[in-house]
Length: 138
Image (cartoon, rainbow, N blue to C red; front, side, top):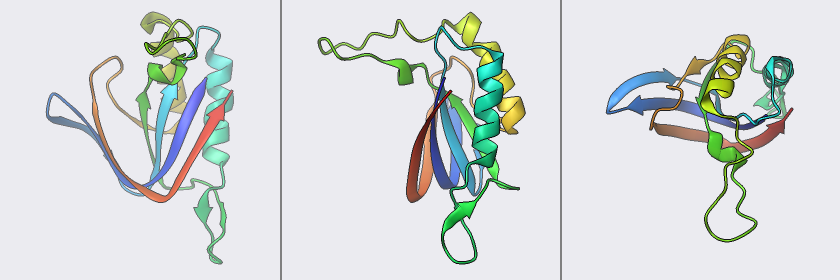
């Protein structure tokens, strides 16, 4: 399981021009789920995300966890793209939708995240704060 985590001032998701979710300060998570992933990995990664200390403390150091800030999570099977051979990425490592969706839903529930629409073509807008972008794997 891979989570590309971006600290944001704000973020939103639209599907077919309709606003689906939006957050203020917090984390935008692009979540990729592999064929090997399960609920236990989702639980570990959600706990890691909530405890990740990437917000500024009173001294301006990245030392504060998420706390009361918001999370927006978007499913992103393309995080498992393999382009080592040729120019057309392969996605064979990504979990099929029927396996990935319940794991995605569980991760979002545990992370307290607002959601995109699983499997939909989404427009994701964000204002990256820092910028701070971290790749987490479980």
